[in-house]
View 1 (spheres, rainbow, N blue to C red):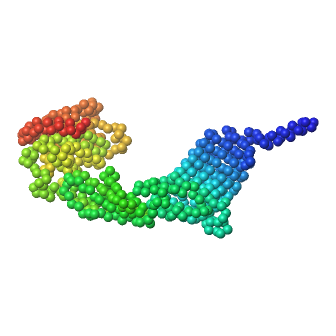
View 2 (view 1 turned 90 degrees about the vertical axis):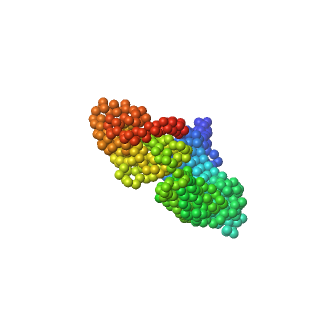
View 3 (view 1 turned 180 degrees about the horizontal axis):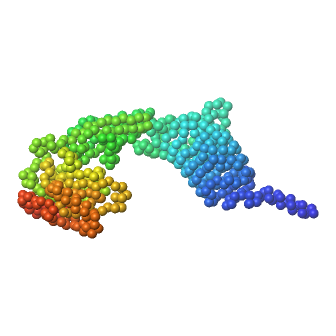
Length: 565
């Protein structure tokens, strides 16, 4: 009987020192040591904090799992918890009340997670917290009162995050910072706190001035783990230590320009210059007519620590480039802008035409062949060919606008270019586009008139692009849905006849298929319109015959050089 009693006593003692594994979470390990009972869940498939954690656990270590969030009252059932390690998980969100009920927590480690921010007021629920490890996260902001509720810390690690700018007030508002000012605590080394701030991408501009001064003058009770903090920007301060830089006060931007009025003839290039002085470095952009100028025309460079030089290049000036260009510089303090007035001299102001582009008698009779080369949902591309004595020096003028407008928009095209794209066409609208040599007025054969169809949904246009009639007399092309076109050589009776023929062709599948088999502009003879329209005058025929050989040769050369297809 005595031996049975001894065996029972030994068995009870064994259970006390080696808890039964059934009291632990699946996949985890529970142990007892000098710190008390511990729960270890290493490299498990946990995706959330378990609800059935034993209430007597004093240390929890969950690492290399799939945790993504610390929800409200995550560990409130474990009121005796003192050590919480949640390193190397995927935690991105920490709830404001995630630490509620942890009055005895002294150590919190969240190393190697994906936190971009921390609800610092959550530490009101951990009044005796001494160690807070947040290194290797993605923190980019440290609020001014972040450390107010951490009066008992002895170790704070914020290294290897994304902090760029913080205020010195973050530490001036920390109760521990003022502990050293109390005579009774100056000799108490146990109240010191180790602070790790290294390996953050510090931006050493005027906004960091106060913090840099703090680091230079830091003293117990705060001890920096690594006092050699380095600048990651701006470029001219990159790699320098804090104790090597002297930062100035911040300053509102001041934008200026060396020239405010510029007048140039069309066709030239112009560079507009803007100087922006500010601290910190401002963002600079250009606007023209309330529209933002595309960035690929803008270049920037630093003249000194505080001044940015921005240049806007306007290539091959056209009349439409005339107007006011605004350069704006802005930082967190404010903004400033400067206006530059650009005047482009119109070729029409010269009589006769400017000596820059003289017109010879032979050029006045040059025949220009024009066609629609490409079409998109809301636009077309015009292509033209002409035979001139000096093609490398020949300029063209594009006349584009609604057919009924007497004054068309003039677009000047430089030498070596024989295509132009027209976009943002309105539905159910008649347009006219003409190509002339230099500043000559359009003549018959140098224009195309086209009518856009009814507006339909973008999805329908993508799924159902059909062949419709482009009228250059009886010629058929594939163009966007509902668009008709004809040259001004045809009379509008021709246009109406061809439109009627198109409408009738839609009524029978056979005629639509027949239209689909028609050739393109290039595959049809120039005189194929004779059966439908009035014949060309004898003068037009003679003019075409005279320039036929030269036009064929020029078109071959331009196709090879421009690689249109």
